[in-house]
Each structure stands twice: as C-alpha cells, then as structure tokens.
Length: 528
Image (cartoon, rainbow, N blue to C red; front, side, top):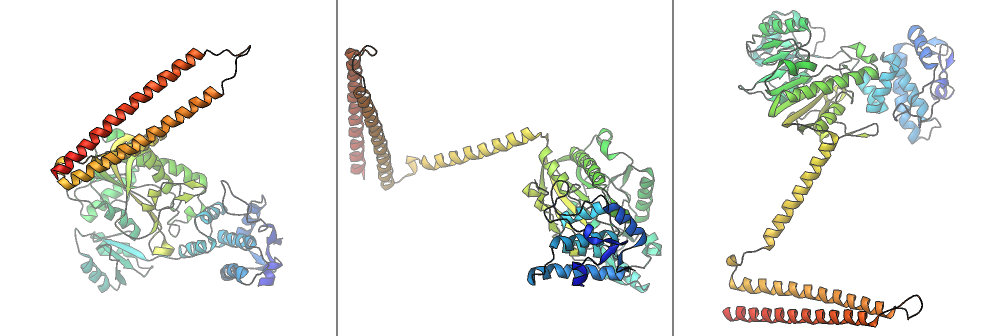
C-alpha cells in the first residue's frame, strides 16, 4: 500500500492523483488557513469521478475499498512522524480530503470549510458518525402523561425504549431506527413529540415560570410557548394542529416576518427563544442538501440572524433572557453573530445550566472574538452523542444601542470610575479619625506625621540646592564684555539679593514649624 501511494498508483479516469495532491502545506485558501489544491481542472475531475467512480490500477474502487483506504491514510499520518517515512503530509491530507468529498457526498467547498473547524482526523469522525442512521428521541408531553407511564406503554408494544439522560425528565431514546413512532396511537393522543435531545436544551435553559411572557420567534413545528411566530402560513397551521394534539391551550400563533416583527408587536417579553433559521450543517444525516451549502449562502444567513437577534433584544424587557440557538456548526452563524450583538447592544452572556458541549470558538481565521463567547456551547454528535447544535444565553441590561466608538468610550469611563473608587478607599483608610484612637495611638500617629513633614523638608532642601547650583553655573558661564555681549552687573546683584532674602524667609518659616512640632510632642508626652 505504501508503494502504491509513493508511486501514485491511484488514478482518476486514467489521470494521476499526483496532479490533485501536489500542493505544499503552506498554500492558503481565501482569508488564510489550511491547504487544499485549487487546480482549475479539479472540478472537472470531481464531476467525472462522481459519474464514473474512482479507479485504482484500472479497476473501479468499491465503497469498502475507499473506506479502507481512508483508514490506512489516517494511520499513515502518524507513521510519517514515528518511522520517518519520506512522504509529505500534504499529499496524504489532500488525498484524504479528496476521498471525503467523494465518499460522503460533500461539496469541495464544504469539505474545505469543515477542515478549518476540525483537524483531519476529527473531520473523519464527524463525517463518518453523521453519515450513520441516528437513534430516535422523543419528548414526553407532561401535560398528559409522565415519562415512566409512557415508557411502559411503548414497551408493551414491543418498542425498545431507554430513559433519556439525567439532565432532563422528559426525554426518551428509541434505539431501533426503523421504528415508525409517528404512526402509533400514543402519538395521535399527544403523549409525545419526536424531537432531538439537543432541541430540548434551549427550552430548559429559559427556565420558564408561570407568570412569564414568552415568545418563540421562529416557532415551527411548535409545541413550546405562549406566543409562537412563523413567517410561513402552512407552518402556522401545523403549529395550531400540533398544539391541539398536545393539549396546549395558552398559545397564540402569529404569522409575521421576524425581520419586521417589531412593527407589529408593541409590548415586551420576559423571555425569548430564537431558534434561528440556519444552513442546517449540523443535521447533515437528515438533510443531505446541507452537505453542498456554499460559503455565500452561509454568510447571507448570518446577516439575517444578526437582524433577528437584534429584533429579539428590542422585544425583550430589561433583565430578560434570550436563548439563541442553531443546528449549524458554522462560526459565521454562531459565534460571529454573538460577537456582533455583544458589541452593538448592552447585553451580557450567561453560562448555561446544562454542562454538555465544548466552549464557543474565540479565535477563527485570524479573527479574535470576545473571551465571553467561551460561555456559549457547541454540541457535536461525534463527541457528546447529541445532534450538532449551538446555544448562547444572553441577558439584556438596558435598551442602549452602541456604535464602536460608544462602546470603547463606555469601557474607558468604567475603568476611570473604578480607579477613582480605589483612590477614595485608600484616602479614607489614611484619614484616620483621631477621636477613635487611644493615647498610645495618638503618639504613634503624630510621630508618623512629623516624619512625613521632615521628608518633605529634605526634598525641598535638595530642590533649593539644585536651583542654587544652576544659578552659580549661569553666572560662571556668562561671557565677558565685548562688542556683541553687554552685561549689567547691577541687574545680577539685584537678582542675587532677592534670592538671598527669599532663602532667609524660608528658613525662618521652617524654624517656626519645627518649634511648633516639638511643643506638640511635649504636650502629648505629658498627657500620656
């Protein structure tokens, strides 16, 4: 196998693979990042490969052979370091990325994008696990039945059921992927809803209380809140049908464009859930079209998400909470949106109560985000056994809207105020009231004050001596009388007299102050 790699025995329609994997590790893509060949003929070769397949030694490679080849290349990456194999890592990585696009049916652009987020080995795990059929998750409708009773009913119907994780009391897991849970009578009775475990987390993070006014801005398929809004009329009808099946009576359904929702709703909410419309790159096992999303599509969606989140904050009361979530793994739709809103609005990130997932990404493609973004959560299927998901929990502090200049000036003012408060505290500590001191403390306190005064007088003496020396040097450096310089001795004498008189007055004042200090010390000692 190693010889085959070194000699480039793999051929794509009789074209050597060396043409596709010859790029050096230092080559960059777009704004800077990891290597991937940008040959113009590459897409032609990919298109041919998709229709006719991958060939090795004039034989069509089966999917099993490609999978074995990928595993072998991943092992070879470690061997190149240990055994000093004379193969460039870039050739191995480029070949792996090539196989990832073909085997998992992703676009070349999407594979490159994912390679910015994951290293080459973790990317394989992400692609492999998201390509497998996933277990089904149910959410118990506690308005009608408890989880334990529902599990008993399902077991009696020979459905393999397992209790969900400890962080929630409504989740049920069904391991048999082929079970048609949507056709059971219990589903029609409204005992449960088919919902991924990741989708439970934003609702639980809101921690809704009885008196809370709650809005779900992008509600479909529904089953969550008091106010459920969606732009699509058909989805709104589905929400109504879903609510009646589940026995939800306190739901108001609105059909408004969430980008313009502020014009229609004039009141504010205690809590808002924004499960924003996204690219769906986190649910590629269900939605295979997301595997071919373009970077432009992702960025366009991110712009809409920024507007939606800003609108959600406008509709929120001060002290209210917004939970922002997506089923996307792109940084543009997640951390970048949160970083934008932290700069624009007076909001703060809160830590999530459910300790599942990785912290948010704070550095991405030479971009540095706020350190607070680490409080967000990234959930991965290959790491945490929950659908790929992103969650951020924000609290609104005021209605203020910042520009970049305003934000910087406010931060500077806060720092100045903190400095002033510290100075005041230090001054209060130093200004000890003499009434609260004992006689012994009076003596020590006055001694310290006298020492301070003596230090100040010594400094003044040093300054006077310096001034005196400077004057002497000026008089010595004065040039003799000549055609160009004429000096009047009378003016110099006047200045010297004034200087001597001023010096005598200062000495007299010092002597008077020293006498007063000595008298005070004697009086204090006599009192003691």
